[in-house]
Length: 341
Image 1 (cartoon, rainbow, N blue to C red):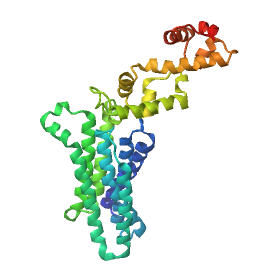
Image 2: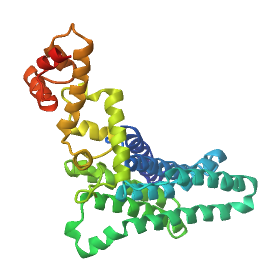
Image 3: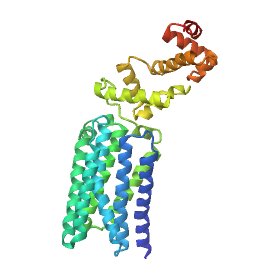
Image 4: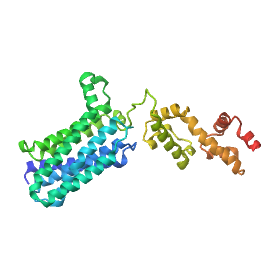
């Protein structure tokens, strides 16, 4: 292999390997565990598999046929995951119907890969259909970010860092599609190089915007100025109550609003609004009511523990805080409550 080809292989393959590692990060380690981060990880994984197939086929023409099928199959998931990422980014509370899109892609891949394997005459047609499916989802994704593209043109100063990031993802995938479909004018490896370039721009963007990049992976506060839909609020409150009862998170004296928000895949602002609008309570009041309810049960059932110990057991970090909160919620001090039972 010549030096020129060696460098070409190195940069294109390096993009693939980095894409896999980055996809694993978004799929399993990125916090909070939001749908959009999972879809972004799945998108990068599908792209990495597809690009990897191109790289190895370019340098190893007699590549194992099964890997060719694997790469083409991954291509059928790029569009759906791009669309689901775009939709979940801008409409985080709307139903995504993601199972239908994913199951549809699976069924589509089974049919097309069967046609591709059984008859060589079908292969060009199958590849065309794959790229048309990819294009269809790209257009759907652009439709989703269209409002923000208009904002770039009219009022770029009001565009958030999240919007820039999300538009860049859609644009990057679009450029990769273009690179593949116009490869006969350039080179088959151009798609892989475009992916590597796109991937490193993502990494540089995150590296040079460390503080602002924290905003990229938290929910967009679309509901800051209006009340959350009652049905959605009811579902979230039910999840929250189950979380408090099952995990007894209120027993953690250092429990923060952000801890519960992360468990529910909400921002701290959204959780605070949820409690204020639908429960008429602050976060501290909501948590303390669970603590006091537990304390009352312990006072009744466990006479061996001192009142101070019960307070600590229920999540209060001091005796005075426990006594003050108990009287505020029940109208009685813990000792008076104990005398009355």
